[in-house]
Image 1 (cartoon, rainbow, N blue to C red):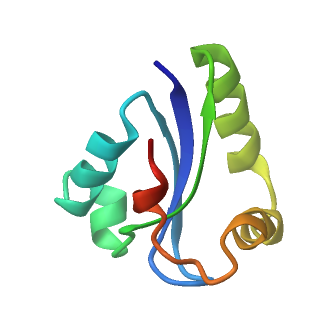
Image 2 (image 1 turned 30 degrees about the vertical axis):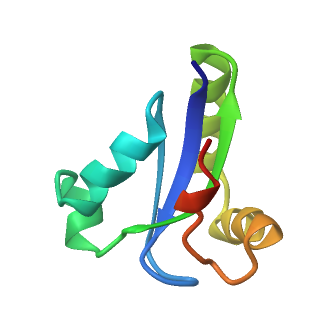
Length: 93
């Protein structure tokens, strides 16, 4: 089962949340249900970017690296794959 690194956003250029999980669909549902304090507080509900990794260690390193990036780099990562910052939940396998 793949490990996912993902970014949720409140709106284009708005608040973002970076996370990692094995069950991305279930985790997004939890965010949208308000079970995460940060995403609930800032209205972060749109899945704008994700990538799959084969193992835990790789996904952990990638998540930590992205969290340390400058905001402009994070925005470029999202915009490169999803220029309109649309919800990409439908792209999940």
